Image (cartoon, rainbow, N blue to C red; front, side):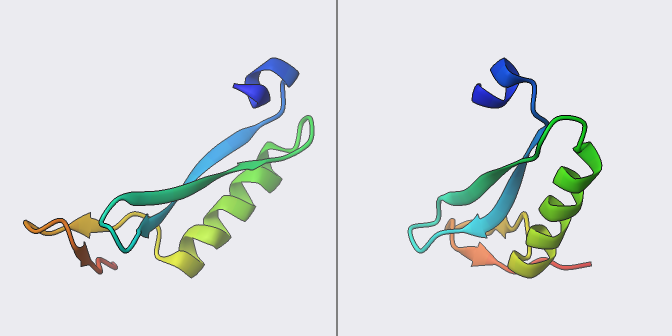
Length: 66
């Protein structure tokens, strides 16, 4: 909500699942008119932390990579 109020670009970055099986993520914000920077940082974080991961039937982490 803060990013919308002040007009800064922001991107939600999925970082995988925590030890309890719940999704973990963070939000990247950049300065005004820095959309490309925001997306570049989000992409780098997603690459490092494997991004979105598919839970299996038990809800535990299943590593999924293309």
